[in-house]
Image (cartoon, rainbow, N blue to C red):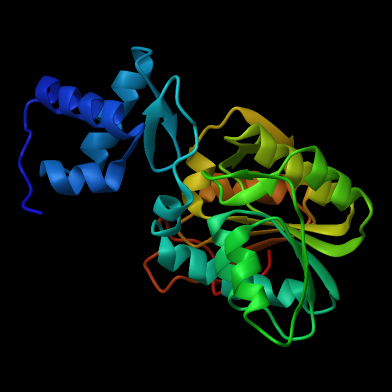
Length: 275
C-alpha cells in the first residue's frame, strides 16, 4: 500500500478515529506506515485521543472505549516477533526439570509452544497452542474446554477453571497485556481468570513479557510480580523497568534479541542470563 502523509495533526487524528470506527482497533505501527508518519507521532496522537476520553490505549495501539480492550490474536502474533522468539528461547532452560507445563493463551507463549522439549505434558486452553502441540508425537496434551473467545483464540469460563482445579502442574507459563510495579494485568476478564487459575495449581510461575508490556496499561489485575518465580523479558527493556522487575521478582532473565539494547547495561544482564 502506498503511504499517504497526514502531516496535520487534526486530520491525522480524524483518520485514526475513522479507522477505529471501522475495525475497533488501530495498530500504531500499521497506522504510521500507512499515514506516512513516525510511530512515535501516532502514539502521541492516540495518547491525545485517550486524554480526551475518545479511545482506550492498549498494547500496540488503541481500541474504542466500548469495544474490546484486546486487539485480535492474529494481529498481536505478528507484532514484536523477534522479541517474542528471543524470549521463548531464553525461557526454555526454566522448563528443564518440568514434567507438566501449563501454557496460557498469549502470543509470546505460543512462540514458546513451538520450541518445547520432547516428553512434556502440556495443559492449555489456547487453540494455537493445542494445534501446535497435537501436531507432535513427543508431547502429551491436556486440552481445556470452556466458552470460546475469538479475541484470544482460547477457551475460558467456569468449565475451564473447573478443569484446572483438578490438575497439578510443575510450571505455569503466563503472558500479560501489561506489567509493572502494581502487578501483572490482562485486557480480558476471562483471560485474567484463567491465568490466576493456572498460577494457583502450579509449583512455579514463569512470566513472559516483551518490553512493550512494561509501558502499557490494562484493567484486569492478574497477580503481583512477586508471585512469579521467574520473569523473562527482551533486551529492549530500559534500566528503570529492569530495576522494577529485579526488585520484585525472584529471578529475571533478559533475552538477547540481537538488536542494540535500549540503554547500555552491564554485560551480565544480557545474552539471556539470569539476574
